[in-house]
Length: 273
Ligand code: SAM
Image 1 (spheres, rainbow, N blue to C red):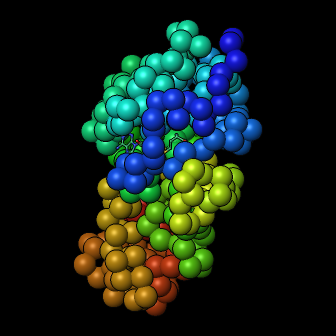
Image 2 (cartoon, rainbow, N blue to C red):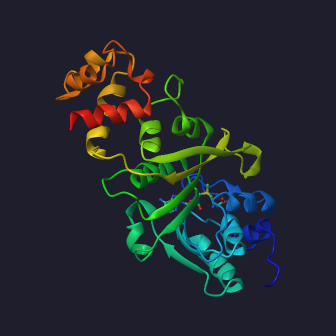
Image 3 (spheres, rainbow, N blue to C red):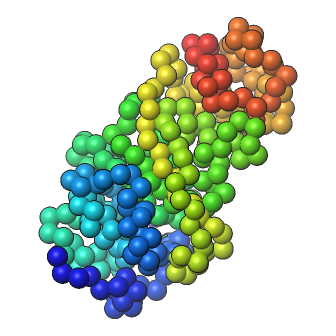
């Protein structure tokens, strides 16, 4: 393998001035990038989907780890730099130009299991995260998600009942997956530095609880957290079967959504049938 030029040099040579509109904040520290690529465990021979490779910092760390990477990038200015990177790792990198929100990832990965790693703009990252965690089919085709978020969003994903950050996102992320805050990343690690701190969340699927549909659970948490300061007997009034389920399970209907654990939400959804 030939030595790769520093990412900073790649950015300069390909004139990849960071675009604010595309949420571009690049990571240049190769040691940090190698640590991020190591978070899912060994990726040697594994298929990886990377969304938003940009100039390819994380991509090169993934390729170095022996992964076969399919990368979706919206900014066509980055494509020549990525093509160059692919030449250093023959047969390991496929780059798709496009909007990751409009692409069918399972089809793109040929229906085979894959890991997802990504450092995305906040709004795109959250939309994709919700998409990867929604739907009835479980386990999903992805084996793990390793995603950079604003720290505040990462805290919402891993929050427990009673935490200020606890809400729909935590229930979605934890009812049939394990979600942990894997690494905090200081804003100064990015070029240009964003206004807020970041953190990486690592998610792996667990077993789907029996007798619970994703649609039912979503309906329940939408109603419960839609009025999070209200008692459940008020917020769940319009959800058929919910108050009966609470009574059957012995869950006090004067409690508020923010005190109901993920396991309790699952039990309520199950009791609603
Ligand atoms: N992975 C690089 C790194 O860590 O240095 C770049 C990270 S930068 C925060 C986000 C990247 O996502 C940019 O290259 C941007 O062009 C790309 N991007 C933004 N929205 C996208 C979308 N909807 N689909 C695919 N890529 C997108």
